[in-house]
Length: 89
Image 1 (cartoon, rainbow, N blue to C red):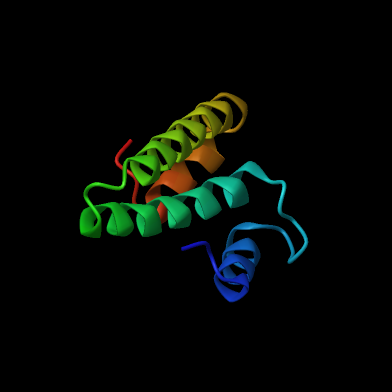
Image 2: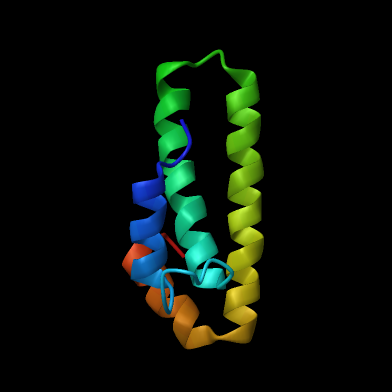
């Protein structure tokens, strides 16, 4: 259910400055988005998994807070990230 090392590494390289740049907000938001999509598919399959649904809501809230931070700090980075990840905002 968690991200594989290969998926995480490719996401970090794609959105970060280098392969060790895991602290950048863009990288963290991209990783959260991948986890959210995986957990969404899991919750569609197992409708009675309430703890999975709770975890999904926690991740969505965390991503929303990080997006607000990125919007406040770097508006152009925010807009490009939203476009690249295909988020609705």
